[in-house]
Length: 271
Image (cartoon, rainbow, N blue to C red; front, side, top):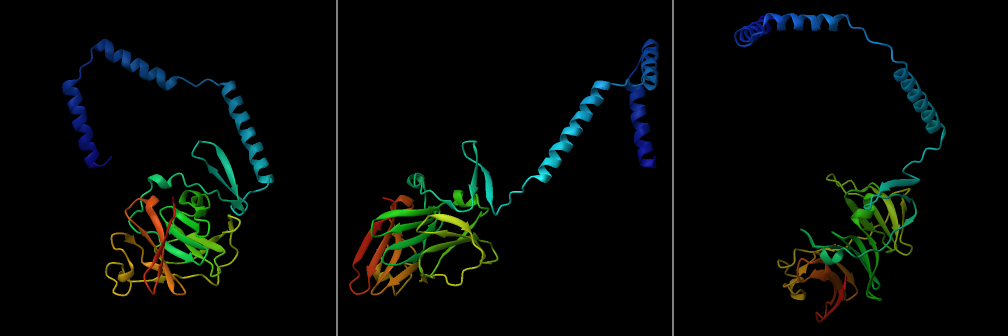
């Protein structure tokens, strides 16, 4: 015991001596209980040891069974817990359902959704809804990869790009270092997602334009009462862009604008 501990001990002892008093009978009773505690021996309990030995045996058997059984990796399946407390498994090659029930209450967020790809038939875009594919011929959303769905594949911040031919969406984890590594690919025609074995060699890139409202080249085509995206896709003498009258996602629109006369054709994405 060092000097500091000794001083504390002396102060505590002094305080107890001054403020706590026992009668002689109480002191003898306390000393007797202490002595009994020192000499009391523990009895052997056979039931306790039997239970302990049985538990150890069961644990050993289960461990050996697990080691002998097949190991299921993330390449084969992903076990997850559903929102309804039910357990289910997503297998590689799973077909993703198209559920739009949450769009009605969804906000656009801090940024306008952005075009990833477009041609004369479809437009692929990414926003707080995840990624959707809109068929402009049938005026309907045909595909969706939501953030909740893609989390089941270990992707927390979705990075998405479209192949140059518009058939495949490549998906990976977006990070602050801009390391574009794609881990999964999604077929637009079959709606099936699976792991990708190699990095894509040809990805489509939309055109980035100056911020609408400050854009001398394109502002003449825009109705600046609308929120307007800063990515466009050129199709011959026209271009495609995204806009919304307000911050409600249900009001998102695809606009096809003619360069020659500024005539616009509108598609309501979620209506």
